Length: 311
Image (cartoon, rainbow, N blue to C red; front, side, top):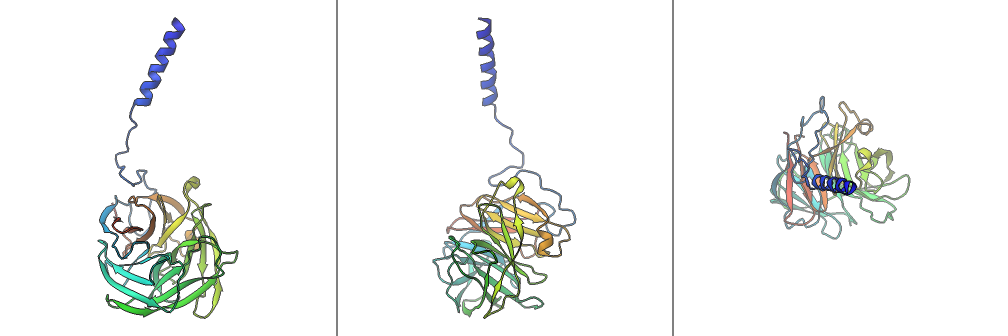
């Protein structure tokens, strides 16, 4: 009887422990990382990020929104596009999702445009261009991949605009990729591959020019802490070049290195998780034009657009 009573008492204590609610971190919210952010001392941009704020919804013209970039010329404007299976177009929208202009693009037949970035039209050039990354390759079969370059329009109006084709190959076989960035300081372009092995391999795209196929240069591999996340679907490089956002289907990561003078420097920085709004099929992210936060987009019209600003 004494042994049975002891076992009953232990069982009751165990059940009570299992039914006790776990404490909820005070800053936790839907889709928001509650963990404290590592120090940002010495870094341009937000000292700490706040909670995501819904600013609007994805417009019906972008049912497969796959890329976002903040305009340099037009404050508060973002350039956005659909991925494969849609018309060759680029849209100017605001953070509410209102469409401000539609560009019908000519001069190429895209296969799978997955991201857009904006930077100097070429190294050493002051004029700013948009670059569309026709870099999707689900089955890693493409012999060469392409970017499409066009100057950022001076006015926001519907127009038909030709693009220049910039082709390249990889040094180690085909890759699928959905993330393209430009260094605003130098005009250097790079992409991050989409892989289930890590947050992606980073390839620099140096020497791009029409009529020539160049070979990309592998700079390194990015990994989440303890390799807890993979499959990067979008990226954005901070205007300072010292922060890099990486979007996956479930999280947002930021690579940080104060004083990074190049992409090679930045890749040796710290990878930290940052706040994000919950979205299905999240495939778009961009720093705001002033670098004080970022905007998230997703496939599916009517889904929320989230802005994460400084705390």
